[in-house]
Image (cartoon, rainbow, N blue to C red; front, side, top):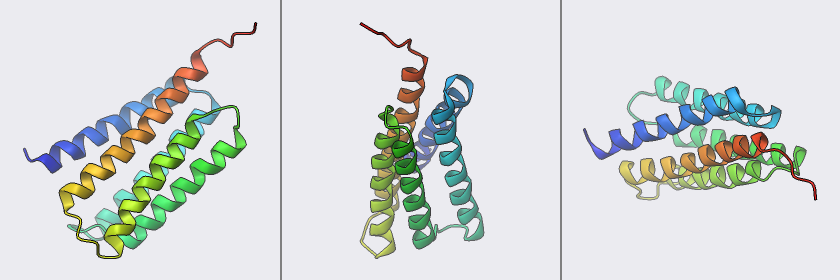
Length: 141
């Protein structure tokens, strides 16, 4: 099993765990964020199916920017929650790596997968952090 396969599977496992925790234990904002992320990943998988073997980077960039905008919108709608802002930053980082591939920057497939999974792990951690924070009782002094 190659490094790119391990990276792909680790990102997929983090994705599934974050979605499961958000839909099972999260509040409304966490479920919205997980839904946004799920739709973005389904669209990306659809792009991969349309052009097998090579992800079209300009459409992938559009999806990444759309996800970053959606997480930013969620952060603005829920100013008391920090995690949507972190998810927006992580998704923007992923969009930056998609942009480097779209403009032809010499980034290998393994480097792109490593960067993508690192950014995706940031989104997963942000969502899981939001779930954890939503489950904690509010403490009033």
